[in-house]
Image (cartoon, rainbow, N blue to C red; front, side, top):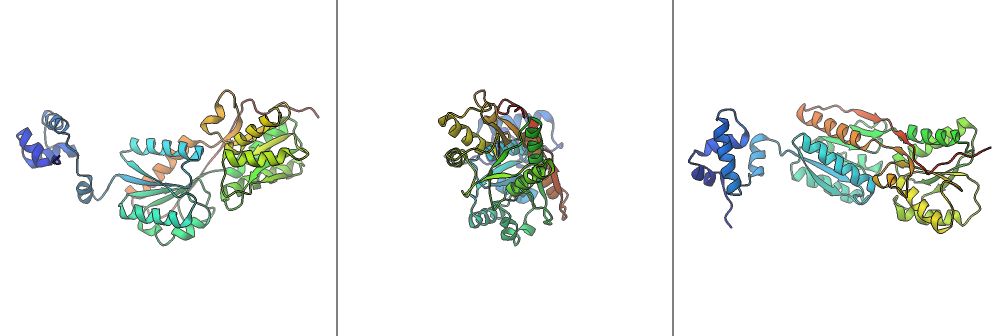
Length: 336
């Protein structure tokens, strides 16, 4: 089937090519009635605008790249949803790519974004090494890092205060009477996880508690890996009354293993998560957790990127959002 062009629309509407172009661009040079009539003809003829040609004229594709390390991760997929909503509300569409926590693939995807001439990129990095890996390309495309705290790196990023979130969690469990709190799922190679573990350790030190860890020996975090780690943990003698899971997915894995081992939550062990993914609030789960404000994070990261694009900003900003405690039913008070 032949593609319908602006000239075809102009002929059918009985107007000039330039009048159709003005109607499509929202120009005030034509009347509202004429614009509505032309748009109706476009609809009837199934006309699709040539966005490539328009972007060459406007010098903007109205596209933003979004690169995630693991689109299958519930937290990441929820963030992608909110980022897409926030971008659309501002007149932009999203091209979503999954780096699979592979530095080489991440670099290839960034090159792809440059080739597709997106207006800017939101990047949830594979890890701390991503900055160095992508440094040759960052000057070519407005970029905002998200999720991972780059600390003092001279690049724009938006993150949650993971250190403070872990402290909130320990202080909450301490307030319930817990003095033996295990940190579950500490993972190397991630600044986010490093900051959470540091916050946990600092809070334990200040409260006079002895830090205990169950390290994540896998390359990523998931319900499956949380389950496998918890099975190993529950096969040993327990020296804790509460588990503070590094992520909600880890906590869900703990719940699955605990059910199999006939360990009751919260009667036998209190369980606290981190992230507040959607499944955490389901009735049978009811997980108490530290919430990352996903909708706010999405709004701030999109606005930060659009500021760089629209105002041609050459500097950088570091935005740190505060987490909050969401209290449900997976933690119980213990008596000393």
